[in-house]
Amino acid sequence: MRRREVLTLVPLSSLAADNWRPAVLSEHQNRTVDQLSERIIPRTETPGASDVKVNRYIDQMLKAGLEQKEREHFLSGLEWLDKYCRAQRVQPFADLDEAGQAAALTAMQNGEAGEEGVRFFRQMKDLTLRGYYTSREGLLQELEYRGNGVYTSYPGCTHPEHQK
Image 1: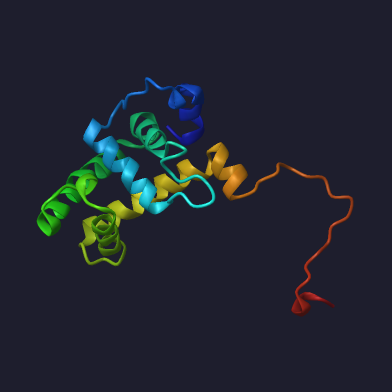
Image 2: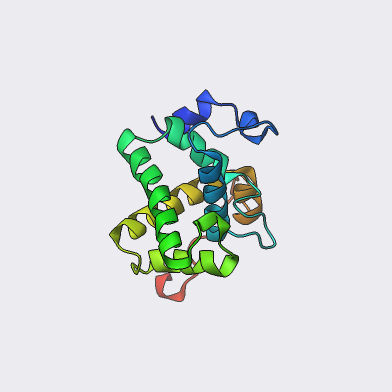
């Protein structure tokens, strides 16, 4: 099942509900995903991943939007991350301070945490970006999408090397 199909199964309003509970993730995993996504897209002058509840999008994708193998990779990646953080810094990822979390992400991104770390970080980053940039805030505030427009004339390319 793909993202468009998942979105038809669950009304977006239910993802925003105050009584929302994860369908696939445990409470600890949900907290980890929330903090991971916020480290990937932090709040600046626009909302961050936590503000748009990317963790809920990821939980929904795990429930009905990913293939079984992808879901298993993601969940085993969360387990791996906590083991890695405990080995490096004595605590699971969600309990680390900001500097510790940043160090773990940097190690995964740079390949210093091994192949499993690289693979999990790529999957987490992909899901975070998809969840964020398909949210209302991601589209309208971050990307400043204004909808389809009608041009009365096409301005063309303004780069000098493309002018004839």
